[in-house]
Length: 210
Length: 212
Image 1 (tube, chains in turn purple, green):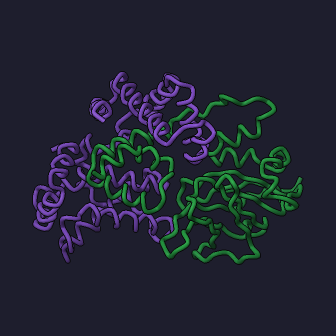
Image 2 (tube, one colour):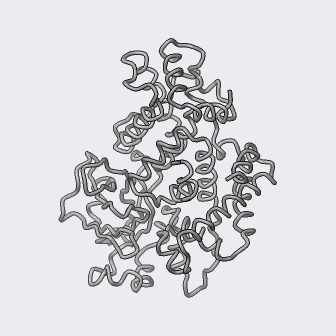
Image 3 (cartoon, one colour):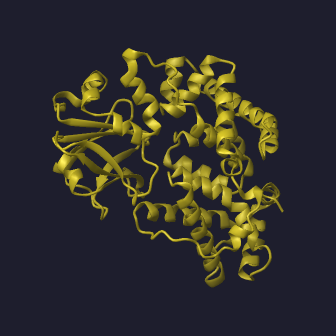
């Protein structure tokens, strides 16, 4: 089962899917690997958002899963249907502990997850060549139809200007600002697809549908 | 419904730009746990943010210091090595209102966004041994948060050891006595007005050059 399938199945009834998954983990069943497939990518984003580099994030990710598995097998979860919420809290707590210097850096000894890694559990950044991704972004910036769109992205991401001040200076409404972002995201999906980047098909498809 | 709202509001893009308040960020991250579509969006925006060209598009000779500041926001090690006493004079007008009389020729200025490195890998700020004061600009801090300087044990530095204030553009300036930095590493953290957890912003220490 792929990440998309897993999440799609989860979206039909995430609570029930989580209950089954927790039960499988408690019973050391075959579905245990699904925990990793389903939650690795969002948790990696949670760590990256807290400015934790990828190597340390990998370590924290393993700790998050191991902590969850131990908890499930020892005490169980109060609300198994909210497995994602439990993992999220565990991850954010570990991120805080990491930055406070409370965690000794360690290499993960449990290689089961790592050896069973599937492409679908890797983020766009991880499954794509760095230079190629950089080229795709450059292409995106150069090909944006309006100079104003480029300016918005540069000011928003490079200069970290607040949205409000960008809107005021460019005389944009909030809706227009969001449209600029939407166009950029759509165009990026097309650029990725053009380069045949792994996973770009699904990205582009989602953009088209979105 | 929540998913449609996140899509319509371009929440993934704003999340990556760190434009969400704490509550909105938590809500969105919890949503990410069950939404592959939004995870795809976040990954795409993170790729854009990380790989956006940082070339000297609009730089002119006269505007060089400001241009360095702008594009240097993402790489403070580079900027830290470039920004020093000489540049301070050039940008004095930019920060003039905040600095007032506190500018002096033995002040070293560093510009950074919150760092991306672990606390065990402190960023070393290079400045001369005759530097008396170090000023650090930190951008990308949430509107409802304030920036604190902590000792290695996590205690806030004494008030006489440093000063921190928010500028009109939302960034923070932290001023230290250079001696403070030479003695130990200093951790930076942002906190909200309540008792919520602090967000670590990294760690700095001194790399003093010998007097010339």
